[in-house]
Image 1 (cartoon, rainbow, N blue to C red):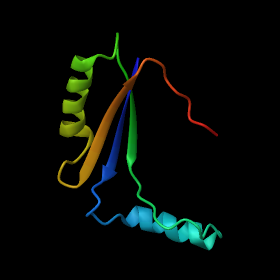
Image 2 (image 1 turned 120 degrees about the vertical axis):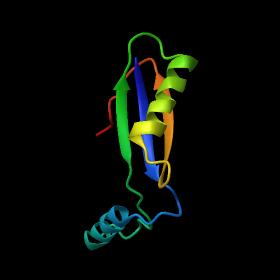
Image 3 (image 1 turned 45 degrees about the vertical axis):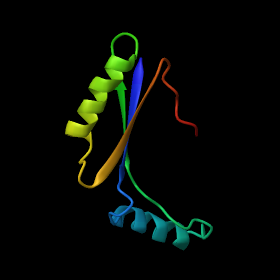
Length: 87
């Protein structure tokens, strides 16, 4: 089973990487893009079913290790099947 942890900078935190990506997109002609926020995505494979207890434990892991709660927000979501990224 898999659990995804998404980590993003808090809205009030400047995102220089996102700004760099936005500038590059504009230079390449993608001027319809008005904002970019760059974050992190962790895909965790866990043993057994993803139940409330597992999600609570991984929420703890995200808050302790995967995200910096001072400057980042995170979201933990579980699924029974690993979704492949779309091309």
